[in-house]
Amino acid sequence: MDNWISVKDKLPDQPGDYIVATELMWSNDKHKVLCMEFEIVNIDGKEKKRWKWNGIKSPWLVSH
Image (cartoon, rainbow, N blue to C red; front, side, top):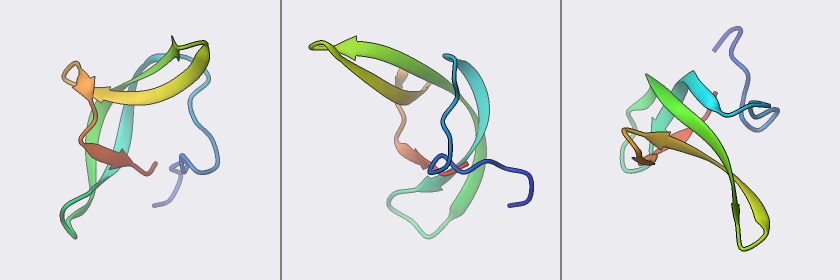
């Protein structure tokens, strides 16, 4: 995937909406492109970074 940044290398610095490439966890159908929300929250005093889609935790693995 040329010019895409792997989430293994870097996550967004700021919360917001991003165009991402995903991998379905239950299928070999790879790299769907979706708009997802990236959020940074504190849970029990620990910072958590996560992806949301349609207001819920993403059912896909974000790869890029």
